[in-house]
Length: 382
Image: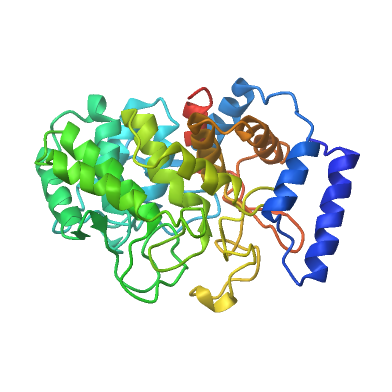
């Protein structure tokens, strides 16, 4: 998509103002409003074009179809991640691939915990205390027609492991990095990560639907635990209970809850407030940023991350797209405009990328990223 001259002028003015204020090249809420007013509405990206690219990306990353081995992208040679496989198979119509991929992780459960990563061509795996087991339970529900009852015992053990992290309706994660898809972000102490909490709500509903012992009170407490993370003083859902950073992926659990169960935990007003106030860039949302829209310090991550790179404010298509779909479902009038624009930013680069850098010059990194294929199955969802 070619930006209009008016929009380019507003972006140039925003950059000059940001430099004057010693801010990164990010849109403040005011800048977002101004750009929204001036943003031309492009022709909606053709869904078949998106589906064609998604199908190509998935096929390119299937290493061994019969064994369900899907790599994240051609640049990843050191394993298969559960989170990537969950999203990638969600964008595939290949039932045998879905079942084989799920089985690879189910066969390696350790005391109910699902592996984060499988080491290729070996029986070794990596176990991080992250969201992998939550996604495992959600995955079992999403593909229940394909998987059948063969994994009932594995799911019971997985749900017991999930429950061991819950207190007062909230899912607690230990300190350090490697605690969610934010694998580089360091959480200084035990914390309730909004992304994980949202997945916990979806996993609780998945477990109940699969016949595991989940009470109505447990479901209500989980939903209330998610809503309590919304900061009324900041007017958005932050990355965690203890860290006030903006995080667009904090909404992913709510998106899955509405997509898979037609239920909601967050109020529409909370969703819209979070998305409409989220800092952005020339290519999309900054996935993480400070409350004032600045990038996080390098040492907030392990290893340290430069401004605009990876999780320090990079723009991640899957999370942008899901958050905007959710905002549209919640009734935000600007969602379609932003979604069309973000989709065109991605597709004009000829692929689906892991993320786009937002500072100092937006560039694409790590093309043909398989988990973005999940967007294909949701292009028409309301």
